[in-house]
Length: 295
Image (tube, rainbow, N blue to C red; front, side):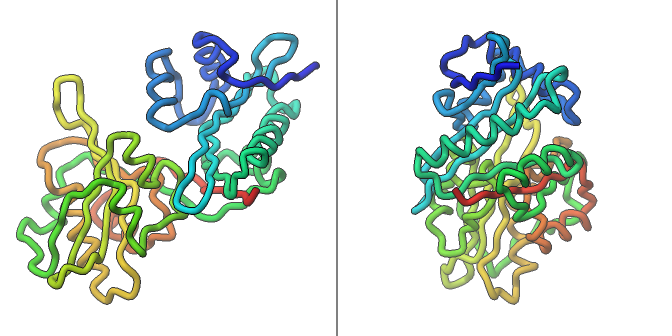
């Protein structure tokens, strides 16, 4: 076995699609992509083909690791946007070769923090990343509810708060913005994916909470889903519970009818929000770990 690591931008589009689908064959979640959907994913997630890696064995692609690099505030971040090995080559150390090559790339690009997510059930992947210096910093949850939420959010306004729709970039300037969120939940990623933000003020105009979310629509313009990425309250607020309810009302309760309401990599350490959603009938359908490595 002669493994050679190349960059994704040296491969054809067809090779990229084929190695993606073969690499995720048998994965716990169906991640099958067409050429169009994979290109859309690369763009919406900020993946850099020039910084992404493909492993070849005798000119045959056998694995990949997608990377996104960005400057966020005063830090340079790297995100592993997916690692896959073709079934017949798993267990041969190719995944470790790719991760080590990615870490070397991060070092050359002066990355401060490298992050990734892995399914909690994917013990082999977690073990691999841990062996390469990654640590679990939080657990993440996907909570979901398809039914209307009129029975758990009040339809009357909270007189003590005001909600203002703002650009996601505005959220990134808040003193209590949660900078250690998973890559896809950071304001830059939400903005790149055409997401939205709502900022909550109290009666004297002080920012007390925010939510980052995205609405998805069908080709006919019908609301298909609302995904919540972050829902944070300013520290030391004794009224945190009311602020959370008000934010969730603005995110999930603003639209009526049957559509999917869910969280996307919501940090489980945000216990208040998780408890409110579970109490409202949201159920867990995926859980991941958030892993980080200082480079």
